[in-house]
Amino acid sequence: MQYKVVAIYNLNQITPETNIVTVNVIGQEIEKLNPQKNIINTRSSSLFQNYPNPFNPSTQIRFSINQSSFVTLKIYNILGRVIITLVNDNRQPGDYTVNFDGSGLTSGIYFYKIQTEDFSVIKKMILMK
Image (cartoon, rainbow, N blue to C red; front, side):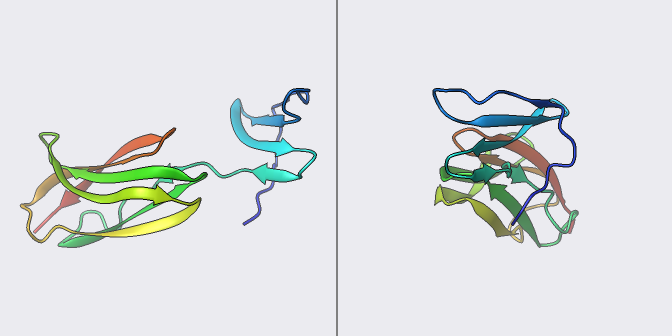
């Protein structure tokens, strides 16, 4: 997958210690370029909204990670108790889809949380029976 920078807000100088150029777009770091290796990392970790939402009884949860990391993906009830752990292992950079079957649960609002070494996001989903 290739990415293209369409607008540059700020381009920092190459640091002699790391030989890394940091490019900022609208104040957000989007890539790091090592001029000696020509390696570009433009991906960021993401947690997407489950689909379908509301769901009955199953849904898919998609996420992507930008570096090798230990990943956990857990489902919580409205009281904040862990219902199930869907992912609890090391993952390589890439896109992933996990199926969640809520057939044993009651209708209501649930939360899902992804956590890596440097990334954590919580999203809401609704089970309607």
